[in-house]
Length: 245
Image (tube, rainbow, N blue to C red; front, side, top):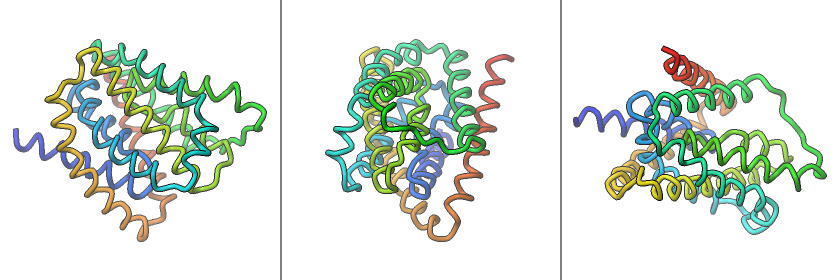
């Protein structure tokens, strides 16, 4: 059992390294690897507190919280509502369906990030596209525990400055984390014991973040991100294929 928890801690250290080096990725890495060791709903329960703590840090580190909140509130509101609704899929514990959904989400995200050209969206599309993106993100989050599709490509396409983009991602991920906790907790899929174990995972996640920030100064972030995406693509493909065996 001690070896099992050591492995879980190592996963959060790795997720923290990715978060520290690239500004995102702790929940995605944690769900991708832990989803192969336990049910996706159990993995989501472990991921909630470290994700919340690290995303709050990222959210508060930027200069434009109020302006971004005013601009992005339709997307954030839709994420919140749809994540709580979509949490029914993850909470039901159908591991075949949730594993397939998690694998598909990872493949879509990694494949898009590796192959697609960056999008630039006209400002006139934002008022009606923002809530649609939020609703889609919430349904994916509620069903798989992964926060990134399609909110990350959408935010990257808005033409935000570097600091504003990092803070906008932190804002989106924080709302997703809170809504996922409510959605799973309200259905009895996450209890006090799960949150206690999740709180313990904060320490390795923060240690990994510190290490990742050091790595960022030694390795090209673009190269690090490319290899991370390749690994996520392979993990997602394996999880997707597992559901058809």
